[in-house]
Structure formats: structure tokens, C-alpha cells
Length: 238
Image (cartoon, rainbow, N blue to C red; front, side, top):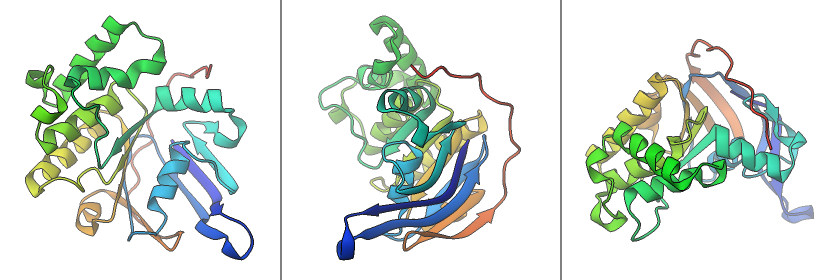
């Protein structure tokens, strides 16, 4: 699902150049549930941005779902994100005053689906995360844990092969965080490859595999690798 080979990412020039990532090589198989853990400034978010095709590496090679990121133009990268990658962030990023079903339907804006079909898929995704009774509630009417579940529904409504979750429990209380983590496990059990970026070592230790980042380098790869599932249907990136 993901392969990084000698990946580096630097910012700036000359003596002020900052190396956010240095020589990172690893791979994640389809169906894995992986934690990327490390302190602030260790390169976790930079790694997520590269895997999520939100940024390009300064050196090395990033392959996502069989596609070399450096060989894709912006249009094809957008198609890859729209059809293959889902994102969940700590701060939810839900539209204020908008109903849950419409927040989720927005995750399908770039797929070419009709509005009615997007809403139908959104309702199904909300039922999947246990919020079928909150379809028409607006963001401010939901708890923190419910808003994060809406954000997860938006991320998976397009049935992505890969789900990237950046500190998904960081803004939640312990109970809500545990519910969100269990939901991520359920999504993984249904076939979605899930990578959870976190600074929480306890959360990371509870997942089958841990990639440990420090000072922009991958310093440890611990845990088991899932059995590789069959290939997904080919996607024509247009």
C-alpha cells in the first residue's frame, strides 16, 4: 500500500536548511494497522503529508497504492487522494452550522457523484460509525467524540484504500478517544489500511505495528506485518 525508499524532505536553503525527514525507508502492506509515533518535531506530520501526497519529497521515492508520487501531476495526485486516501485530523475540520450528513457528503465532492448520491453514501457512512441518529445534527450540537466520528465517516465515505489519522484522539477525553480508536480498529478489520500518527506511546503500543520517529529519522520498526490482501481494482487517474 505504501513504500518509501530513502525519502528525505528539507525546507529552506543554505545554512538555514532544515531537514524534516532524512533517509526514511519502510513499507506498509494492505490491511495493516500501524502507529507512527514520536515526540513533537520528530517528522511524523511531514511523513503523513508525503504519504498522503499533500507534499513531495526532496529526495527518494514515495509509492502509494502502486503509484509513484513523483510521476503524477497535480491533477492525478488530486484524483489519487479523492479515490484512495482518507484523512482524519485532530481538529475535525467540520463546516460550522452544517448538518453531519452534508459534512460527510463533502468528502465526495471531487468524485463526480450527484448530490443525492453523495448524501446517500454519507448517510450510510454515518450509520457505519454509529451516528445514524445524528444525520441532521449540526456540528455545534455534537460532542467532541461524535464530531470526530463524523470526521472519520467523511474520510471513509469514498471507501479509500488508505486512512491516515493525525492525532485522532488528541482533542478527546479518555472515553471518547477509546471509542474512536475502537472504530479505527473496526475499519481496519473490514479491510482498510490505517496509519495513526500520534505522540501517545500508550496508544501506539496498543497497535500491532509501530514506526518510531526521532529527529526526522525512522529509528524503530516494531510489531507484526499483516497478511497482504489481493490487489484492488486499477484506478485510472483522470
